[in-house]
Image (cartoon, rainbow, N blue to C red):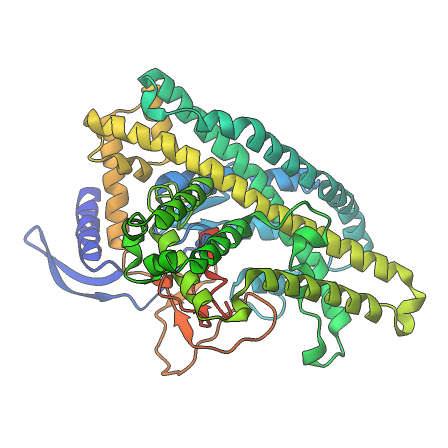
Length: 575
């Protein structure tokens, strides 16, 4: 049996080996004459997890914060805000409190995971709960026979669930109104006030207070955004079985797609404007149309690489006027970025390369004269599809025995309107959150500059490699530069050790990870993200950087997308 100090020495050797290869290793070693000897190492092909850790999934978060998201963003969004939102939701719904010390979200392998095991225990309070159905919703492969954990329909379970049902319906009525009030106050009052502050002009003491204020803004904004998103998902879960029952018995080609019913959710639900996450796409497409209308401007945009579009436009009077409009577009949507929830990622006003590449692709597509690419026409067709889908649903609900039961039509319409409203507010709050995160980045980056100038950091961007808890402790004087350096080095080492490892989507109890075996298949299978059918070449990408190569009419195949990808969707024939 190894003594503790020798065991730590062996662990250090294993860590150094894994850091060399960037993936978990199966290491053979020997101890002779007081020294460790490395005999051989090879990548691990399978391993299991400690059942005591519970069950965790990266579902949803691997799209929101993909890859190695910054520790600052993970600590705020995942460790603090997600847990508060979930605990608050269960409390509001009269479902009780989680056990003391419950960890709702945390990184594993440097990637985000949330505690699906605890969420299941709350969900199981509702009669009709089936673990297998729940797992299918979040992408978990069952490791049990049958339906797993289930909650039967009994008098006891129904009575227990009634307060939850009443509280849920009440929350549906209040949450979107709270989101509307928050968004309105943020846009009218808070965002202009924050935008007027130049972090570089603040004293050190003032900057500290503004950094704390930004952490609070991040938490308040994300709390609303997460809560709305949770209710949007719940509303969709309630509506999906209703639509499935309606489509039951219809030929597949006549089934009403879910996407057709919620497309154009703004106008369809009496809301004031098109969904916020689509605004940059519409405006950039309009700019591309204007460029195409002037041959000199169009030539400057499409001829040559996108990086030098500004220089080519500045060479002519018409080009300079157009470039001013492009700069205004970038300023209005400056909060956008490749992964806008990751504070470490530069925004469009710092790096406009994605805007320029997409603008170039738009102008080329318009120049090729494909009417299907016209956004106004697409929006009109989308509106018509939504109206037609709803009319078909109402017609089906008026046939046969259903016409004798008008409650089914009212219930269907009420649930549909609820889904539309919450999907719309989910997207609207994403924009509000992106704007808030943009300002958070500005102040944290200035703090990084000052700490780097003082020798606390090697470079300003290292501020994002610290968790908020560590930054706050340093601001309070509880830790100093040495502890910050150790925290950064630990994270960089972990990231190096797992840089070539793609972790499983689900970890913990009952999960066995194995290396995926190549099957020699000639096709890929994935999840379609829109209704309808499309045919075209597949453009398989792993990042937004790779997605810039997308051409008109291609099928975009990606491991995830987020609001930063939306300008590409107008080029893709399918997603």
